[in-house]
Image 1 (cartoon, rainbow, N blue to C red):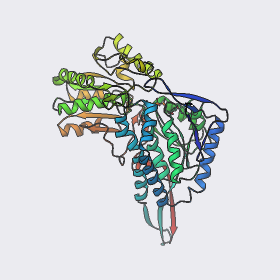
Image 2: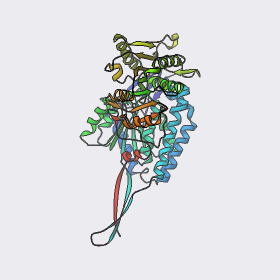
Image 3: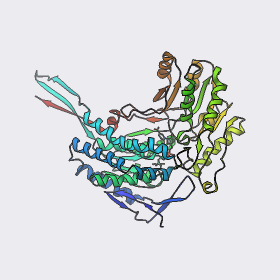
Image 4: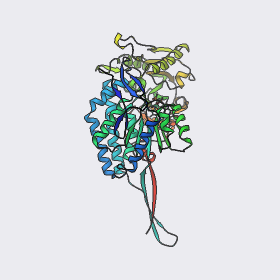
Length: 488
Ligand code: NAD
């Protein structure tokens, strides 16, 4: 059987590159070739931006809000109808367990269209009445107009979920998009093109170009003069490169970047819930979640017991093939990423950390040795300034450290250039609210982790991002407010 091809999606057509260039998309489970992916050059990016511009001023721009909303509901319904196709595509690219993709990635892919269709439909407009200098009257009202052609640059860890989290509101607000999915995970973005065409979204509204970042599709897109704004999720240093790329044209950016998030566990917590919550925060999706917890602080009286329980919990989680119903953890995304994570494992060992569990590469059956398998790992005993405690690793690992009081843990938690998320476990609600107001993060969970209501503001502070998306906050980025003043 010939290897499938993943093509660009431009003006509702699946197209190869003019250059004929392709790159390999390999499974992180066993290294097998999933597909050959067309690699965009400048001509494909030009064509995608031109198609998006034409649709903006053409059929898409002429639709009423209700017509757009109906189409986006259709997109969500079609994703759900093709749920298994999306599941297979996402799992082929990422190797994540079916159970996780079924619970999280694919449902959120559909929900991102419905939620933002509802937001846009229900948003009120501002209105002011004023007196004119000559004693007359005028009224002001605000129109929300689309920003234009939006470049969406997406990462590989939650490919469909994070890409649609931006495409949903962008389209709901009347923009058109050119998406550059991660080179590691091109498949669901391509599949979404089929959905768009099937439900009747006009050609050019949703476009996809594949390729890499620097000197490839990502950079061609962010530098393109036809782009009106860039929304990006990924590493902080990539965000810096994108900012430079758009600086000359002073285009707006929305950035969801890296993190080094603290988990804080007080002795008065619901112990079992805290162990479960921190285990998920540190290891779910094999630790490849921006909101994940790589720094865990546990109040001293329960420290030993907590570390033992966390170890027992993660050792009970099975690594395995995605389709196995017992699998909780899959591989990392790629051999390159595993090299990076193992580098931190080595640094921790060299610095004399106590390796509570894991610390290396697991033994796997022969058919999986080509995959990016790694052991979930817990350390204790590293100094606070060690790179393992300070830098984002993005793997299934955490360092656990005892603390003695609230002031100390607040200082430790905030001692980071990042500011994405925190999770706090305590039964003392006053303390919880106090910490929520003092932790320097965009998202603070109390006795919970990764509970998301899509109407709420989401984003990071410090090096973890610029701007907020979610609910009406997304409208701030995806629309321009135009004031209309009418003399009565
Ligand atoms: P990455 O920054 O390497 O790549 C993200 C995307 O940017 C990819 O599509 C890549 O091809 C593209 N890219 C790379 N260089 C570029 C350039 N110079 N110009 C334009 N595009 C470029 O990130 P990743 O490794 O795919 O994802 C993991 C990172 O994403 C982690 O740091 C994680 O914390 C972060 N992340 C953040 C959030 C959040 O909401 N804050 C969510 C998920 C992931």
